[in-house]
Length: 162
Image 1 (cartoon, rainbow, N blue to C red):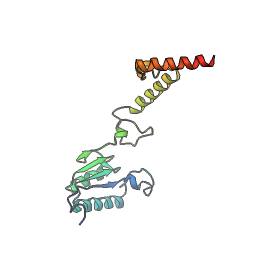
Image 2: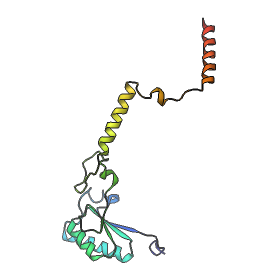
Image 3: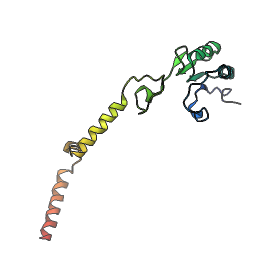
Image 4: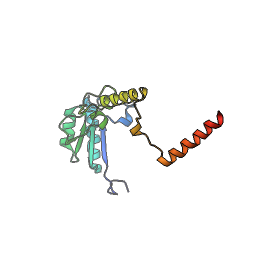
């Protein structure tokens, strides 16, 4: 019995598969030649026939993604595969600019988490260096009775040293 027969939803993934990026020669668009397009089509049809719940089309030309989407019954989810897919996904870190590197062509930032984190880290450092953090309000204190007992003990020790 395979996992699809066991009714465990499986998502197929074709095109640029990050787990195989080194074999593919880096993060490069896949399916640019007719031979590559034919292979992607065969892979998509095979996944569809196997019964995948959906398939991710990553880093492939939009025209090829459109052909695949029209050919298969499983929903296609694009990431760098153009708007013809049934749905879209974007890595959270890309969405918020948290990668601190040049993004792929298909990435659109919807927030600037990198600037937020950088600003927060610099402000924290400045407060620590200037001894403004932690302030008294952000510090724990002994109960009054324990503090008085400690003060008495410390005063006795100082008196013994004199």
